[in-house]
Length: 242
Image 1 (cartoon, rainbow, N blue to C red):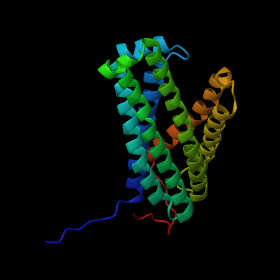
Image 2 (image 1 turned 135 degrees about the vertical axis):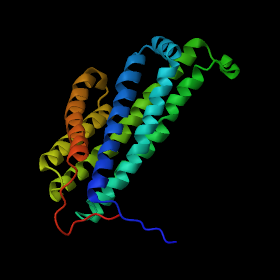
Image 3 (image 1 turned 120 degrees about the vertical axis):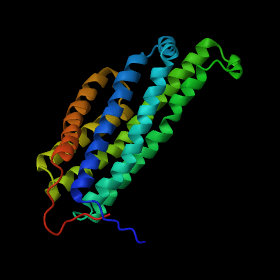
Image 4 (image 1 turned 90 degrees about the horizontal axis):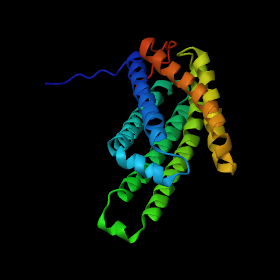
């Protein structure tokens, strides 16, 4: 008996991509803004340690949420590659590579959060450190995670630029979504490089956060909702195939 398989249609690919993108947005916002922002007190190692120790379950949920986001990112890289390959094979592959590099960096970066949990575990070998030393190391790993996240967003910002260009060139969805994604890419890049180059970055962090979050949220949420609700309109001869 021979089984028959049919390639998924562009509409189906687009809708799956939209749902994955929605999961990524929800997971990322939950981990960064509802978990870490509520537990980490900037510059106060003792208060941060106390918050994480008292809400360890929430902290672990943030890590799990990040993992879900990364898994969906890997799948989305493939779907966008398949969807936009007829527009430009090279650029769709480039966008996928940048998204996968971002996913790899964020995955390794999660080790910093697991190190934080180890420092608060109360294991016998930690008795070699004083409480102040443990708290200082905890803040060190949290700051390292923050830096690793910024490095990952550099690659994501480039991916957003390339994807935005592909959207504009393809005509699959309204071109304004591509322009919004390109604007978001400049926000991601500006924020990340500012954190690397400015010694007093923390003084301007809230400003850069608004520069990044508002355009990125509008662009990415608009794109994912359009893909879910409307899908894509494929010009003749541009039918994506896996």
